[in-house]
Length: 262
Image (spheres, helix red, strand yellow):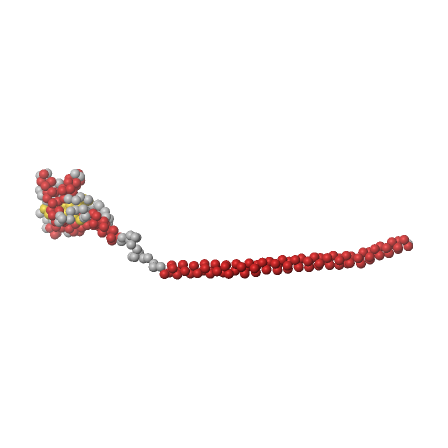
């Protein structure tokens, strides 16, 4: 019993002694950590103070120069802006080295001038008469009667020649689909009815030749005679009258014939 009790007491004493020494050991360790922290803080403060001193010295040396550089750049930018704003603004009307784009009207006028290859010294009426004379000469060779000149056919021919040149096409039909007969009738030729003519019957013949680019009446009639379809028009027996249209380098022959039976 004593031994067991004494072992228990020693055990309690061991436990108690261990418990009293443990805080003491922990206290010594905390004290050591605090000392190390103080040393580190002092070193940090010395380093920071050194860096601040170096930075202050650098600013005192380079600061004015750096500030001066910024001011110079700002002044240069202001001067550049003022120079740009003071410079005169060029407009298309004041520039002499730039060609202005011509308007559509000017382009069309230039094309009209370029296409007027017919000799300006020759009057249109003389050219019309020359075409009629040459046409009738070809009919005479074929044993056909000469064609009479008709002012209404001339109106229809002249309108078509001008329309083709201005609207830049070359055809017996207009862009709207009007044929040579439609245009000749609109001019007032061949508008007959049984009532207006007081006849049993009548027949109206229409025909047309067109040419482009010829400079003389001789050239255009020669070209027509070398084309089978155009030649047939010139030598058609049913035609009695003719009208000529000339505009620029456009040539138009309108043929007509009216046969009435009473």
